[in-house]
Amino acid sequence: MEPAEPLVAEPVRSTKDPVLPEVDVPVLIVMDPLTPSDPLLELLSENAPLVAVEPNPVLRDTDPPVTSVLRPADTTIRPPAPISPFPMRTLRLPAAP
Image (cartoon, rainbow, N blue to C red; front, side):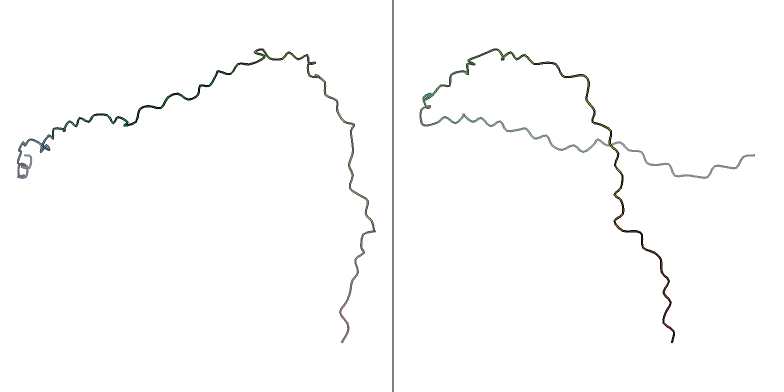
């Protein structure tokens, strides 16, 4: 025999429509464009287009680059010779009392 199921309160089920904000109708604003009170200025100057005197580039005769690279002579660098001989170790004992 199976144990009896415990008594559980059934949840209260309800349906409500969501709360929606009231829809505002946008106000249509009509404005005329601003017109200047003075008449438009006349065209005082006009720039002519740039005209190249020589439209084609200048032809230049140049030799192609050299393919072989000349190397400098091999050099060996050694440290400089000491100016004086290395110092010798000396033992100094403290003065006797």
